[in-house]
Image (cartoon, rainbow, N blue to C red):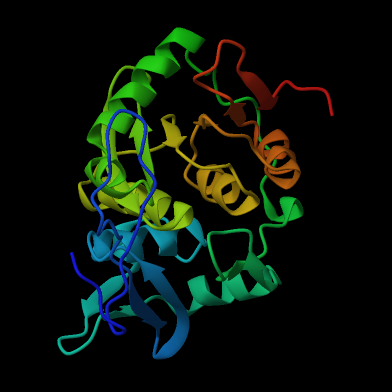
Length: 258
């Protein structure tokens, strides 16, 4: 494709198993959310499963436990949502005193600080699948990643019962992908406690906090968890599995000596 000063050529490196097109890019938009008429967050995200994103985020941040605690209305003229939530639920989140921080995400991601002391201590929630099972689960997750195959510039997440993938989402942000799969399950009326979570990026404190809130047994990644994520998992009784598709996965969190 010829280029002009206003249209520079977009080059992408070849990816494993094939070549990306010369114009491979990922779509990114901003989506806002207000709670009880107060602006609380603007996501930079992939423009799909947006209701699921909003519901999953509200759950992960502690504003709701179930759908009967929120009325969500989309804006007809802009990408955004108004959420009506009982004042006592909002006050509960506010009273946790979590600080607003710039998270360790892809780009500038503002979120609430995932303080391990705000995580309710719990018993060990269960066991993670064996190594060979993780390889099959992640193989299935990568196979669903159409945008990843096209661009190489996107994250994916999925809920699993250890045998099959139950919901799947791709997004430019790791946190967004997780919120989308949790929101998908909640909107479908499926229980999420006792399930596992697969993510393609590192397990940050924010992801561990969201997984703990959801009652998940484990979070697994081909990458690694952060130290604060491990601390949250220990307190919650949750397992984190790093290097999950390698021959020697790393187990952290529940039952691990500090």
